[in-house]
Amino acid sequence: MLIGGVLTGLLGCAIIAPGQASAPDVTTAAPVAPPVVITLEEAIHRAQSSDANYAAAVAASRTAALDRNIAYANLLPNAIYHNQALYTQSNGARNQAGQGVSSQAAPKFIANNAVHEYASQLNVNETLGLSSVADVRHAQALAAQAEAEQEIAHRGLVAAVVSLFYESLAADHKLAVAGRAYGEASDFTKLATEREQARESAHADVIKAQLEEQGRTRELQDAKTEAERARLELGVLLFPDPRTAYTLSAPEAPPVLAAREDINAAATKNNPELRSALEALRASDASVLAARASYLPDVALTYTYGIDAPQLAVNGPNNVRNLGYSAMVTVDIPVWDWFNTQRRVKQSEIARQSTQVALSATQRQLIARLDETYSEAATARDELASLDLSVSTAAESLRLTKMAYTGGEATVLAVVDAQNAYVTAQNAREDGRVRYEAAIAKLQTLTGTIER
Image 1: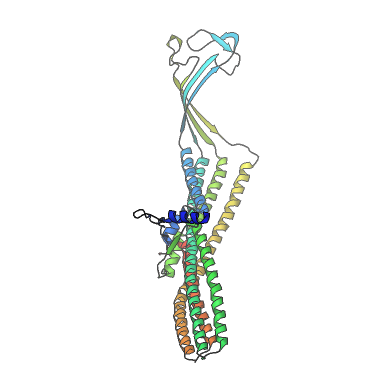
Image 2 (image 1 turned 180 degrees about the horizontal axis):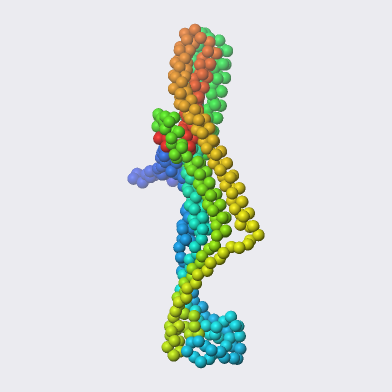
């Protein structure tokens, strides 16, 4: 009875009166934002704001530019407004005041002029010497060198982004190739099974097709892992969160390789490494000039206008005017420094010789790298057409071999070989595109004029 009552109660609760039926609770999922589309130009722009090495180069360039402005400013007179109140204990005696008063209390310190002394003066100072001119030249050269180093960092960043961009794009394409290869292997397994069931082929063909399908499965998993790795590596430069979803967009046609004469002219004119070496030599010349400037005298000019009196007032007792001026010219002539100046000149000349060797080495390296990189780019460009032809040929070979196998005129090994050749040709084409783009990026680090 008790069990029957419980069941009756449960059934009664389950009955819903007409008009009171409730709709099922369906939670509407929030719309998922589409992946960000990233072009090569956008990738370079994003990387400029996140790469630490490039940020350091920009900071060094801006700091060197400020140092140059400071050196310019040191050539100009500087002015300060000096204010001072000085109290010195009296020694009990009195002396002539020189301020319209017969006498005043004398201070204990003979270096001070009065017990109460006030100074409110404008001081203008200017130092004329060859060392200031040498400092300006040195700062100019260092600023230009830092600007060239910033350009080197920028072009290096561009080359790195181009390489990562096309490596990630190639990894995505290889993933698609692996997916198609897996589908092809799976279809071939079905075909071999059907032929075995029709008694048109041996069971060994099925086993060989299954082994090929299993291998394609592993290759597909490896391709997924490699594509994810490449995307994360590029995402580090593009987003605050490297896991942000994005897709890459690149033109189908590869960039055009400029003529060799144009490349040589651009490298001679625009190469930042050569410009950096030249500015380093200029800085060494300025260091030699600064060291030799110690042989010459410096002229210092000082002009003072204001008050230096026992009263902080324009007029003192008996209408004596405290406001006045003074001017001073100082000439310091070097006489003897135990050959330290000669040693500093020798040091700077040794450093300049090292800089000259570095400049010569940079020039030679530029010539060699230019020839090497251009040859690599030209070879990669020529190979792209051959790789495209290999892909189309391998695709046609696979199609004909499968037809021959279906007609009983080819073996399973021939089909597997054709599948492998097709996959290899597609992957080689992707690697060839990456190689060509990387070579173009290297040329851009040398010239900066390759158009995309």
